[in-house]
Length: 155
Image 1: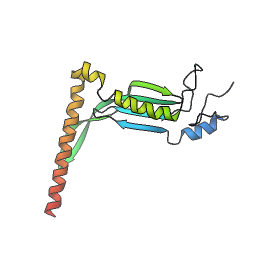
Image 2: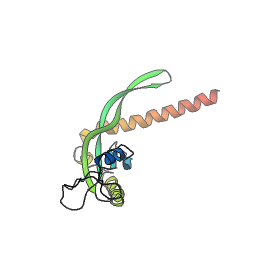
Image 3: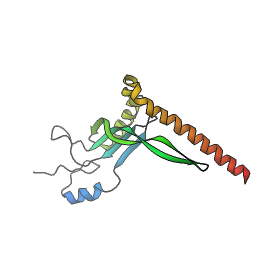
Image 4: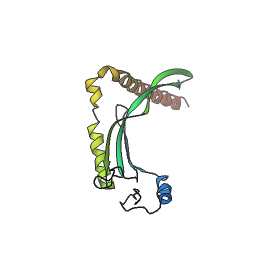
């Protein structure tokens, strides 16, 4: 039985250890953080996910929803706790591809598809905390920039 492992160019591996060495290297084809905190990631898998139903699917794009956490931020000697977005491990969408060119095009399509997330339209209450965090982060960033500019003017 042939190994289901493929190089980025689509040729088959004859040795699983060679695939494992390549798999440890950088595998990202694309990585985009969306304005609402979601993350679109496209990677080379090297392992055929078609399950022998068609051409080997060795690249994958996934959209992950953000996770809301709390973090402490120090501004001019004060510490405040604000909500913070991190990439959650809960995926919202997944597409697989046979070639790197298809994966790049698929990554762009997925980014466009998730610019306005479905749940933002259908469940706005769930997203209010994330949108609030985005506003807070922008305000804190502006305060930090003004504080740094004032410090430079004093010196």
